[in-house]
Length: 365
Image 1 (tube, rainbow, N blue to C red):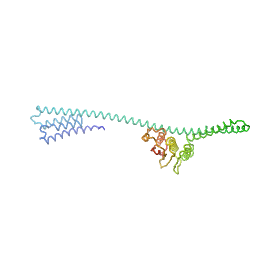
Image 2 (tube, rainbow, N blue to C red):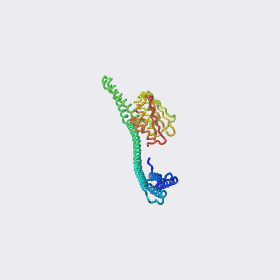
Image 3 (cartoon, rainbow, N blue to C red):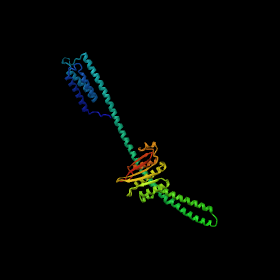
Image 4 (cartoon, rainbow, N blue to C red):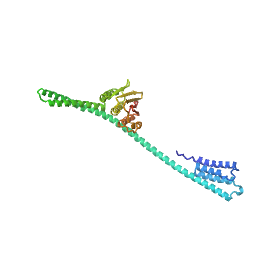
């Protein structure tokens, strides 16, 4: 920390008082300072130069000389200097001048340091404000990108359901017609190879229809818009158990009504990402999902009994610029858009992800 210079009036007043104090003490103990009357005045000059600077120090020298001549030189010798007086006075002036010069240099250096410090503080404040503005803009952009991503998933899911799935259904019906014609020809003993190929094509069509429907629902389940979060989660977890073989329990509030659409989407995506990570990395035989609500928040807790995250990743869990992977970074950023908090607790016995989302003002930041 750099000290601000003292007010001018205080510096001059301190200089004068120091000379008065030196005179008073010297006069009150004249016998002690019979041969060194200038010693306390030298201390007054040192103090004035240190506290007040150049001009108060020079004034202290002048007042000290006048006091010494007035009170400590006999009237008949006033104005007449002996060799000893010249030596004493020269030493006094030399030491006082050196002290004054050093203190002046010190004050100039402190002033330069103070100016540099203030300039640096100004630059830091300016750059901090610019960085904060950039971070705010980046966060808004991130929120808009996530919102656009959700909208694009919703559009792609609808497109798959209304176009590709319908075309595959029409293809299945056409194959059924061709199959009936093939069976009629088989009655005459012809077309066994064609009938087998048609059966395989029909099976592939059924598989494509299932995959397209699953992909469409994973992109954006229509139940999320039509029936709400509770129905969409139950449907998704049932499919996840069937596909992964991981037992998954779901604990929901008894009266979970409809929430704002972006909150429902965020909760669904967090659960989806957590279950995906459990299936790919955790090696857990089961998973547990618990959603609770207060008047102002929605708390999503997903836990497993897997082997936890690698040890080198534990120290990065609290870092907003972590390297834990796109999925966790995406969850963390999604939660931040609502002013929420994401906590990850990982041990050898499993991992727990806790996301807290405020829902009283559920809009993207």
